[in-house]
Image (cartoon, rainbow, N blue to C red; front, side):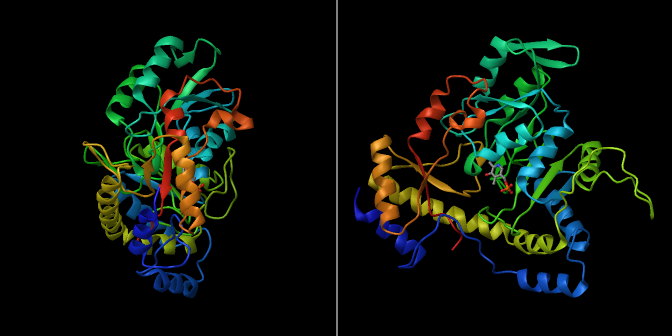
Length: 378
Ligand SMILES: *Cc1c(COP(=O)(O)O)cnc(C)c1O
């Protein structure tokens, strides 16, 4: 590895200072909306920015109902409950993901089943799901059961790694056959599309994150989107303490959560969403530059598949092996250019070491080779 890479990145970001992986950009109405939110005194869990944000998200994701929540993780937790995940159930997900995906399953007192990813998408492999269900699946009257554990498999949660959409058509066909509802962890893929449709709109439920490092941020926040109006209303109900509508009395007949996104965060989110198209354009330009540069260096820069559009949230390269990856990480970080390896596989974490999993051949391959590179909007 030579200094050309560091020089290229420094030149692109036009700074001699530390270059982080991803920082937010505030060039729109952020201050204006925050001021008006404060002036209105509606800074907490109700307010017009929350309503605006929910409508805006439904428009962007082409879904009928959005519920704003405190963060993506809580959105995933509720999303699973919405499709019927209960204590003692199992949920299929990918072994190569950010820990929040698995945690959301565990918060429902259910167990994750970790399956392999595809090499091209780095997300849940329909073939791996099919192979697993052919071996262990058993259809009963009320859904799919795992022959090995005897437990119900009550959801499947694919995650669109770094904004690259998984092979949704194939996955949906398999999940329909086995009557397993899909909850999309679209936390990283706001603005990504599969066959012309927004990610997050394919599953029964989709969930986005607006954490500080995501493509659009509101400090902290999440959104649950769906085209199922009954589930959409239930999402709002459960995340607002399951309070029955009444003009003055407190009536709660179910265990709900206080997962509401404060209006002040929603104000920031609205201003950021207005800039989503320009963020996407800006990132695509950087991705093209990276692609051409790394091609000339003989390094594989990861790009989107034919039938999909990535948001290029976190861009990444694939090194030839672990040694090459380590050298890349050392050199770049040593030069104050932040790079970071992809996550450790979930079964390596102590709380998930005993979960059922397949061989995860592709996940193991990617775990040793994928490195994220600076990807902020400039
Ligand atoms: C960011 C992220 C989340 C969680 O979002 P928070 O808003 O930080 O709770 C969940 N899943 C994935 C894959 C993420 O990248």
